[in-house]
Length: 72
Image 1 (cartoon, rainbow, N blue to C red):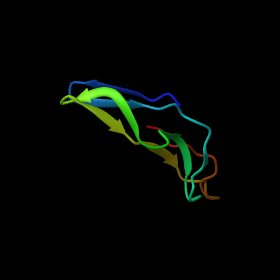
Image 2: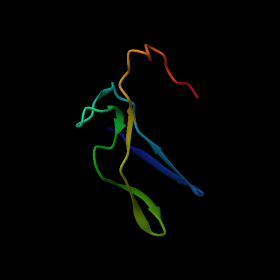
Image 3: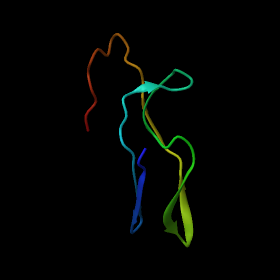
């Protein structure tokens, strides 16, 4: 896992590599990116290190969805 965090002006940018979708602990979603818990970064805000927790997930496909993908 290579978490990258950057602060530019008033924007915090968090980058996580996408992973092959795998089931979450509850089984209700498919995890595609995660910090896998609390990660303290070297990036500072008001003199204090920024701490990040992030999860990105998708819902499992339903029979009606087929293989459609959502695009921006």
